[in-house]
Image (cartoon, rainbow, N blue to C red; front, side, top):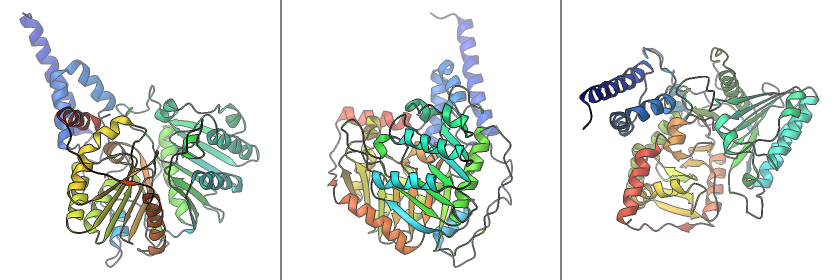
Length: 460
C-alpha cells in the first residue's frame, strides 16, 4: 500500500500539471481540436511526470495570439472578386500578383535543370529554404553552385530546417560560408529559440533569385533537395513529385516570406509586415499562402475547406500522406455525395508505414461517400489540390494534421483557368498509371491500431 503522504504529493503534482496546461494554453491563446485537448488532459492526469515535460516541449502549435482580435481582420477584396482570391486575402495572405513564364516540372530531370538554371541566372541575390538538403547528388550540386555564386559577389542565404537536417545529413557547408554565404538552421531541436516548439518544423521549399529585379525567379513545390526527389539513387527509381518555377511580381511575396522566416531563425525582431498590393485581378495571377504557427489561422486548411464546399464539378487531390482532420474529411465526403467528382491520388505504399496504416479509416470513408481513390505505383510525393477550373494549389503541404496544423508550410494558389487546367492535366497523367483503391473492412487488430495511431498521431 502506498503511503498517504505520497498519494497527497502525487495528487498535488497532477493538479499543478493540469494548471500549467490550462494557464499556458490560455496565455498563448492556443486553439486545439477537442480530441487533442482531451488527449493532453488525460495524458497529464495519468502520467503527469512524463506528460508535463512532453507538453512543454511539444504542446504549443501557434505563436502567441493578440489579446484582442477586434479590428484586426484583413480587409477582403472588393465584392464581385473571385471567392478563392477573396478567401485567401481574408486569411491575412497577400492579394493576387501577376506572374509569367510558369513552368511545371513533370519529372526530376526537368526540376533539377530548372533549379540549376535559376541559381546560375541570379545576378544579385539567392535565398534558399528547404526541409532536407541531401549530402550527395542534387544537394551537393546545389551547394557547389551556391558557393560559386557567393564567390562572384551574389548575396546567398541558406535556411535549413533543424529537424530535416537530422533526418538526412546535409553536405559540408564550410566552403559555402567561407565564400561569403550565410547559413542558419530553423529551430534546431536541441537549442530551440522559443520554448515548447521543438516539434514544429519549417517544411517550406523555395529558391528565390533576384527578388525585386526584372530577373526575379521563384523555384517552388514539394521536392526536397535530395537524390530520391530528382534522379533516384542506388538502383531505386526517383519519387514522383511536382514543382514549378516562374517569374514576375509574385516572386516578391516569396521573398517577403523568406525574410520573415530568416529573421525568426536568427532570433531577430520581426519587421513590420509589408502590404503587397494586388498586381493582378482576382481570378487572375497567383497568391502565396503561408500556413503554420506564424499565422493566426490555419490558412491552408481553411482554404481547402472553403474550396471543397464551393466545388461544383471536380476536386483532384494528390498527397503522399492522407490523414485529414474530421472537418476536411467531412467536406470531401459531402462534396462526393452531392455529385462532385472527388479524385484522390496517393502512393500505394509511401515511405512512412505508420501513415499508411493511419489513413485506412479516411480512405474507407471517402470511398463509401463516392470518392474515387487511386493508388500510384512507387513513391508519389506531390502535393496538389485542384478545384474545378477555379483554383490550383501546389506547394509543400500534405493532407495530414501535422502538415495542416503544425508545420510551417507554403502553397501557391493559381487562379487563371488555363494554368489550373495545366495542373489538372498533370494530375490526370499521373492517375493514368495508378490502380483504383478497393475498400475492405478492417479486422479487429487493424481497427484498434488505426484508432491508436489517429489518437496519438496529431502531436507526433
